[in-house]
Length: 238
Picture 1 (cartoon, helix red, strand yellow):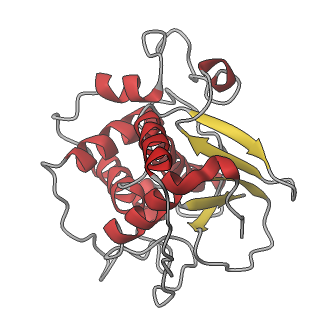
Picture 2: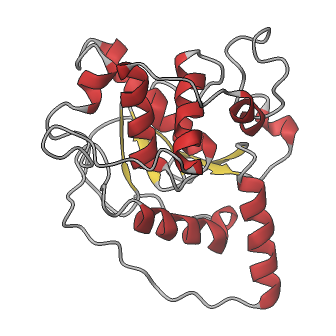
């Protein structure tokens, strides 16, 4: 399991804990034991640190990321810190002509119409994004969406998005073959719908493109897989 770097600051820890609380009713995908508890620790910070953390939290909403190379060779993607020049090599729109008006993932999300009706496949993908990553950055949400899509295209899993989402013993938020109720009037759901549309249209690449698996930071399943990196509360593999 990755250790947090200096760049991951108290704000990132706070996001991780907040995300775990928000999604506690849904659990996490791909091998997570729901009985595993997230152990919170008390963190003492001064006023200056709190101010710095808030500034980083505000930047996290932009959907931009900075890549940090860990000692073990893993790449840690930290949303919201770093200059735009660093982002060009990491997050590149799949089609420059289509995404030319979007300066960031957040900008592209704002451009999406989230009021029109969804197909069953779109709803399955948006549901996975909503329950797995609704408390995380847009970059983290896109990464989750791209994992579902990559599985459907891999030939190793069901060939439809709904088939991937509802595959037995994969997503722990699926209960009794169905999803829990969704607050469709919430900003979380609108973001999930927008992210699913962007992913389906190949409008923006994930920093962990090609990942087929992920798990929450607070569990250690011991997978013998290629680790691609971590975003927010998840670590991604192929």
